[in-house]
Amino acid sequence: MIKMFLTSSLKDVVGLFKEFVEVDLKGKTLTFIPTASVPEEVVHYIYTAKEEFKKLGIVVEELDISVASKCEIKEKLERNDFIYVSGGNTFFLLQELRKSGVDEIITEQVNSEKLYIGESAGAIITSPNIEYAKFLDDKEKATELKSLDGLNLINFYPVPHFNSEPFKDEVFDLIAFYEFRINLLHISNSQVIQVEQNNIVVR
Image 1 (tube, rainbow, N blue to C red):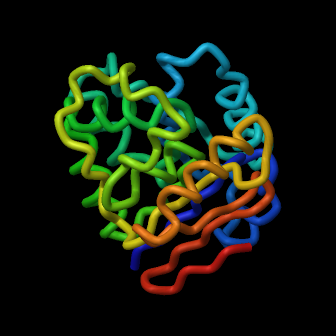
Image 2: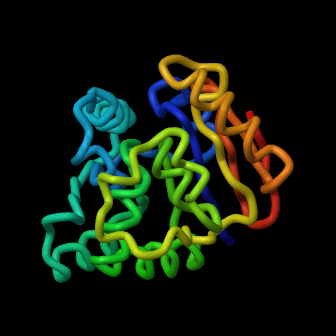
């Protein structure tokens, strides 16, 4: 059963995460993928997310897929209990997922019931296509990206940071443009999209 926790801001929904997982998190292991933040200047959310997981007793193993070897990538993803993909530039993230082959590994593992946690860009890439993220992120930071097809783990398009600074205006423009074109599902920084197979709940 597919199980996913998609959020705008992990630190604002930690309580909901604990409820969603429904298991003792102490000693659980997590592959922490911060790659989307690599081309960004503001990256405080990476350190915040890492600390929040550690407070829960989760063992965090960082994996930057833009520099890691294929062997390291495969080993870490296979041995850890959860996958977390951070916020940052969605286009750069997808580019690096494709180049490393991690897109296929993640898709396979999520379909095999491994919990996927996606924050902002990490949530957007699970959609069928990430073109709509152009309102939030700079496509020019991913010059090697050939296709905008996402991981296609869901049949809707998460829109993080709804009515939340500093992306309030960009999200408004995104929704105005795509509202009647694709199936958008927007969440504020204090909300989350919980996916369990075909059951999709916004909290």
